[in-house]
Amino acid sequence: MPAVFRSERFSAVALLVAAVLGLVVANSPLGHGLETALAFHTPWGAVGLDLSISHWISDGLLAVFFFLVAVELKHELVVGELSNPKTAVIPAIAAVGGVVVPAGVYLLVTQGSGFEHGWPIPTATDIAFALGILAMFGKGLPSTLRVFLLALAVLDDLIAIVIIAVVFAHDTDFWALGGAVVALAVFWVVARRLRTGRAREGRNQTLLIVLLVVLGIVSWWLVYHSGVHATIAGVAVGLLLPRKPGHLAYDRIEPFSNAIVLPLFAFAAAAVTIPAVGIGELSPTFFAIVLALPVGKVIGITLFGGIASRLGRSPDRPTLGLGSVAAVGVLGGIGFTVSLLMNELAFARSADIVDEGTLAVLVGSGIAMVASAIVVTLMARKARRVAEPAT
Image 1: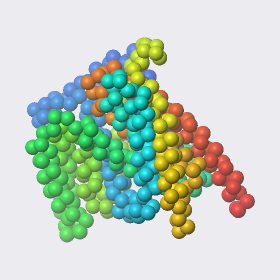
Image 2: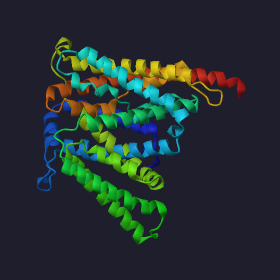
Image 3: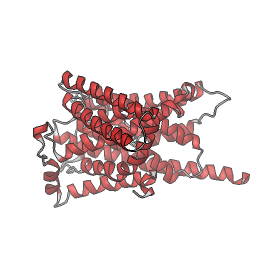
Image 4: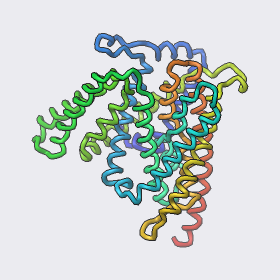
């Protein structure tokens, strides 16, 4: 695929265009046809995969995205910014604040409504979007800001993965889950041969890769049947794959994820009909998400990150000022991909609330996008003016 598909800017723009297109088509004369197409079930029920097109996208293709997240997380933990506990502690504390405060805001707004179980929805940060906005508008900003944002977003996604695995598991089939553990253990053993190089180049190497792909698919099938969300299989495979083969896989799969997987998910998830009701008739869920994403995130990340930066200040390593931490907090309010997934999981049995939640995620993330574009642009201009005399 063309190199442009690896660009953070391309990823952000593709996601936004796909989401807007999905919303527009769903509310056009083509909306009924799109709804029918997404609800169509593929004829693979005989092998336990009676899934609609929509579920193939959210349960199947999105596992590819979570695989890449896991590979990136492992890289950061082993050799990246999170490998040094002293460096990792500040974004880790900020990430906790970016989860706790939005969840608290959501629970406060929805108290007594019966929709409290949607609290995980505003806790996520979309790595692709946040980094894309920073790349588009942050020319001239110090690299430490991007590193801090990346570390925080990766940790944020780790928390989201745990939430998906624990909170949204249902009717757990421990036999299937045990089978998945066995398949993943075999995957790990086979993957180690790639890392140690005991297999010769050529045919043996190809056979190992094919076997790993098959084991990954089997693991995904078993996790799906266990009651745990199937995307967790992608996470497990990404964490078990040795770092060097994982890097190669990431390099080859990232363009496919940016150009197809994420835009397709954004299109399908945003394809909801705008409720024909007044603002006052919307459920508390809508207002809770709209408030928690752009406001709760910036308060939580700024407050926790600011305190951690002050307490962890050290002359031997650079720390971000409160203004930079706040900028990361604004960027963190772009929930989008993972928030849309959590919305589908939280309100799977209530179609109307899913639609309202989707619109709320789009509105809340949209507010955060505009705010972060403005904040990052102003900070970048100031940074370039300061740097001019020195050039």
